[in-house]
Length: 410
Image 1 (spheres, rainbow, N blue to C red):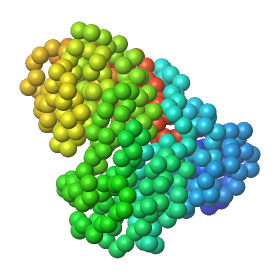
Image 2 (cartoon, rainbow, N blue to C red):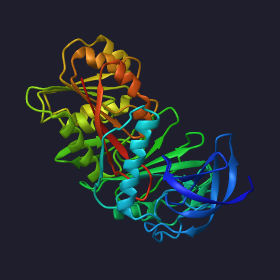
Image 3 (spheres, helix red, strand yellow):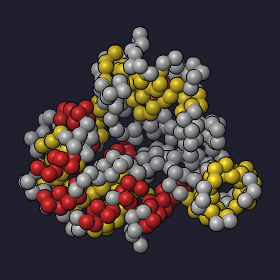
Image 4 (cartoon, rainbow, N blue to C red):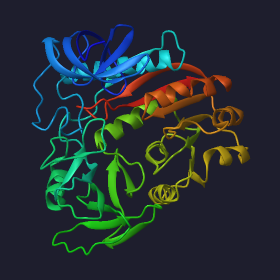
């Protein structure tokens, strides 16, 4: 195989790359689209596949557009992967990727995947983002498929309020690793979390309302200025969020996720819902008014503390802190419904079996990575859960990222 080849692209892969086949290998190409004929340079070879750099588009897809951000592209900012694709086709590709993962990794022949759900704006939607030290006195984002950082002066994905905060804090110094910035749409609160090489706290002086914390490597959050959390309202519910844990960065998308989960659960009065890996309580609080009882399980101490605070006014929420697999083994009271949002390594040991033992007849799996869901299908089958359907929620337009909501029944 020569270094430069012509290639007809036939599909799109999880990770955002288009792919085609040449001389017995699958060739993955970033910044390309299915249906295009391209000239590429092979940059990474393996026995069954290779990765190539796009050199020239010989026949362009009708869905290709000019990227809106001048920093988009190879060897530049890797914050986006799909600015060159019209947004409606981005959503179509996300549904295709989900379907493909369920087939190839999950063993489903014809999985029912609904059209991808839109959630809010396609630009300026991010209320939280992590930036890295570029080594050039300013912050940036990592380059595609690299840990190298590309310095940036602004980002069109940021909500205007987060963009303003980024402008105020876009500075880097020796010893700074990264900066996690968040804003609240409902309260206007701003929170900046610093991560340093030796957990050394810098001297911080600010002349506007903002909270600043130092996030230690062991997870400890050290307040430097103000409170180590902020409040956000989603669908009329007020949540307390802290850095160091997964939290919504697209607020309309978070509301869409709650609605999608509720629709699949068919939750109603009299039902007992178990929220496993409940994190900071997005579904625990968000679904509390629709059922008689919610039981939340979470291992991360700060996430559980925030969930407990947010649900403190409710008398129909019971929380258990600890590894979900261990907590579930000792629970005995029956439940009707379950929602699980596992980490990327998937469901813990016998989580699905214990949910079945407790009586959950409908289970909704929320996956931030479709491969995680697909790999867990065998665990769910072993507990006699049957896949019904799934939908991708477009939480991150201009990127290949999406969240999957999948329904299983017994």
